[in-house]
Length: 129
Image (cartoon, rainbow, N blue to C red; front, side, top):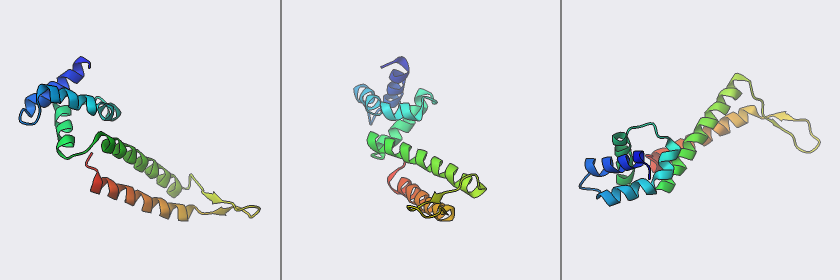
């Protein structure tokens, strides 16, 4: 554990002494390390302690947090694809055997909008992280 991670653990147990011992705070930083690394080390140790406490308090497991990160990334990809279809930069063609290709961009647009709303709903209901 490097000094920055130790500072996060220290902030976690000093800001929330009723919830964590120093040992538990270190363990939480270790358990959630992959999530924190995926999010990025943009915040100071106090801010990370607040975020980490929020996630733990709300019962969000590291697995769930990583899933939410992946879902958010997928929503961003869908947004980019939708924008390109709407601008006409992308055309989606379907070709069955020897038939001529058929433009299904409008159907794809409708499906992507539906799929995006489903992912966003799942994030709102199951997520928080």
